[in-house]
Image: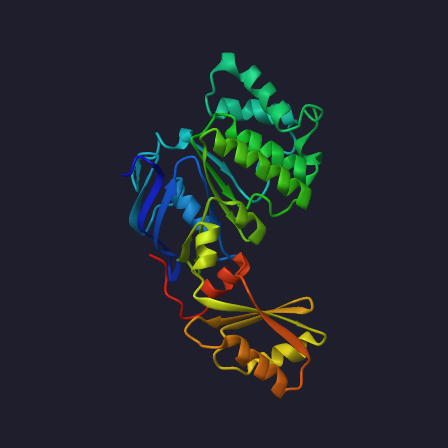
Amino acid sequence: MNDNLAIEARGLTKRFADLLAVDSLNLDVPKGRIYGFLGPNGSGKSTSIRMLCGLLTPSSGNAIVLGTKIPGDTSELKPQIGYMTQRFSLFGDLSVLENLQFMAQIYSFPKAQRAPRIDELLERYKLVEQRKQLAGTMSGGQRQRLALACAVLHRPALLLLDEPTSAVDPQSRRDFWANLFRLADAGTTILVSTHYMDEAERCHRIAILDHGAKVADGTPQQLREQTGMHVIEVQAEEPYAAQKAIAKLPEVASVTQLGIRLRVLIPEAIEDPLARVAAALAADKVSAEPVLSTPSLEDVFVAATLPGRDKAA
């Protein structure tokens, strides 16, 4: 295994009866970086994470996580991992302090270090005033910060986050990501699954999953440069009429409406894409202004998950 990698997976596959949940996943996750799994529900993100932390046994393939082989004996791996699910999984009838104390016991954190470590986490995650509050009565953002504090209490080398911001407000999400960057800067490797484009933009590297397969992998900038598509933005007073006109073109891979704007994807092999779109609009007498645009990460996602697109290596 490459010493610079926290996770190295090859051909990782998981079947549940006739369902192929994860299909031959190859993965290289560098140490001390935030690596994102981007994909819709059912794309295999959660199943992949559960295999990588030893909760699920792969049907085939293998991985090395922090030097531990999977499948194999993961007893030495689990103390090195922090795991946070999309659902609040702590104890609602215990206080913030009691949850942290309980997790310290679960992880066999040294007794002499427990109190100062818990005080440090309460301060860092802005939970000092809530220390005696029952976890079940906290707001979504507060519960999220408590869950993260519990996940990192034992100072794990690898933090696995399964859609951790799916139930919080935008400000809480921004604060959460600020905490993740601080952890990564301190050397923690973070694997986070999400279906939010703005969160994926924050990752150092992203794998896009679709129907269990990895269909793209790279930094956000690399992925934008490798869409394989011309991107045309169309602003129209009647966007639905413009969409109907453009969709008639057989070379159009996708046309998506965003308010009064349309994002049109046409394969790079097609010449004069702007003229083709303009001609289609004129033919239907639709008043609109098409211009070439640079790809967004959402354009990348749409292009990567189009039917018939090849899987990434």
